[in-house]
Length: 353
Image (tube, rainbow, N blue to C red):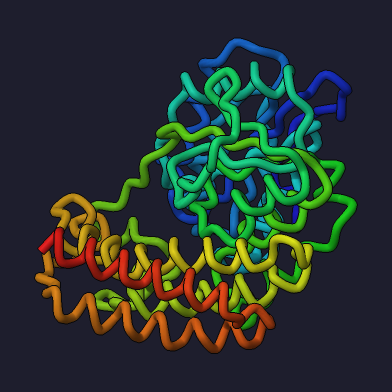
């Protein structure tokens, strides 16, 4: 990585939060995102932009940012999304690092709240935003956030849940201590959710933070605004497609079940099965029948029949049996939980019509 543009900026002890933005060919949007963050009057944060070798005119738009809180760096060559995410997080020098994408509009009010919260709690990793983390299971909510205790509690909530990169939070001490590069550099093996592996690994070592608020909204709208994961104009292999949900669940569970304690490995696998099953069926239908969501991906609304959802559900169940056997959790108790969750999913599919 070349330091194409930087300002004199010392690593000081009072920087609580480094806001690290991954950018590529969205100069205007990244500029607006940074300006909105700079409206927060505080000396507890700084901003790093890691540009993935954008076109010259797009990078020049970033160079219009003139503020001592902002440091701009550029990769020597184009790295691609996941590798640039890794480079971006590496830029941070504050106690905590918050990862953002340049295409997202974030809630400045919730960012202010986060800065206040980080002064109150000491956590290793966290997530700010709406996500699949819905099974909180009675964890006490404190000041509008959930602080999950390290070990079983944090692992069951955080581990293996696919999340949008914007909103990922990590304590720099833990980022530097562990070797997370492999999750970002080998997507064929680990998929396109590297942050999800880190959430699980750090959750075993340190308390985690979950702030279930609307933190960002992605902005697409035209072909040049689509994620770089979908380069072809009519490509339909999106992350929310059933086959990809199944593949993601497979990759995440097989890896994370190896580091889970035996006492709660079964519960972890069953939770991720239930969440993945609902995302692959009901979540898929709601996405493809949502006008704004389909516009975001440049697609037309698609009708999903009950029969098709049931077939997806059955496929997910059969493939999941393979995962259960690989993780050595395929016993009588788990088989019953699997069947109960599957039948519950079928009932929900029929209810939704």
